[in-house]
Image 1 (spheres, protein in one colour):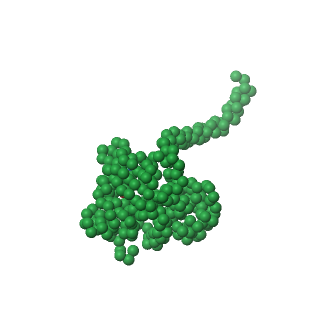
Image 2 (tube, helix red, strand yellow):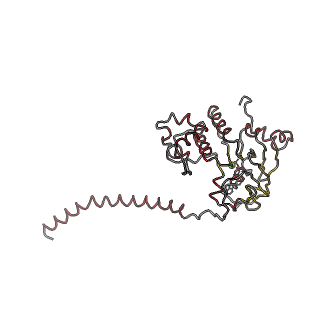
Image 3 (cartoon, helix red, strand yellow):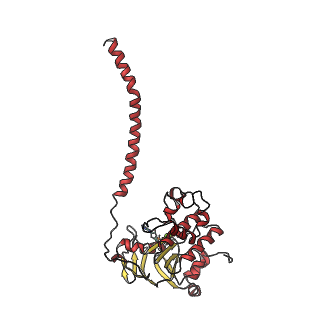
Length: 308
Ligand SMILES: Nc1ncnc2c1ncn2[C@@H]1O[C@H](COP(=O)(O)OP(=O)(O)OP(=O)(O)O)[C@@H](O)[C@H]1O
Ligand SMILES: [Mg+2]
């Protein structure tokens, strides 16, 4: 090799080095992309929810009936719900109590058809829920759960989530007011447009719950499902949340998984579940007098200060 071509080759190699380094960076970028795509496609490849219903449903009266309903989760030996039957009249409050694992969450999941019953029928206004179109059915149900689903977006967008028609600032604000949420929203920089962080990370538990209640108020669905939080809130936010709920509950058929004494005391009927079976049913006073499981749970669970 001549001295000239040797120098040329050497400088060419030097010139290539930075580009080679960049290629290794690209490699790690591609790796990250592939990993993210795998997670994404795992979700995209999920089968669609079965929606066999054809019946349109504009507005229900909110009459709920469970007829001999059983649920057996795949891979479980014992049914999570075992031949449960009850009725909830329009506009009434039904409290559901029972030990952990007794099937309370399973029961309420059947109404919006998050799960299907293995046997028996769940009816709304006398029609089996699987006959309704899924979107119509879910529009009738507002759900305030223990773990509130929030998105990394503004307060207003989180309250109006899932509803695009005719949503204006004024209606969202009214819902927030009724949910006792404006108290903290107005203190945030940006107010209604303030970001709340990933899954509401910038908000407290009580504030997240009030956003969920505002969402339910805005939705104004005839059927309301509540899963009361077990986690203790401080007295002040507890009062604000309870107050917002009291404003929400009238005029709705309400199913509530109750952890608070005040909820069961005021309910029109209390359902007591034990290992998937409906063992007692009646009002708070009737069930206390009976001295059965409810009376026992009552002594264990609701040892609240009288002043409450
Ligand atoms: N997705 C599932 N797959 C399999 N089994 C489940 C599933 N969800 C719940 N179970 C089982 O069904 C039973 C009832 O569960 P459920 O969540 O309805 O109880 P719960 O009364 O809501 O309890 P808690 O008060 O702790 O929330 C439990 O034994 C539970 O292990
Ligand atoms: Mg539960």
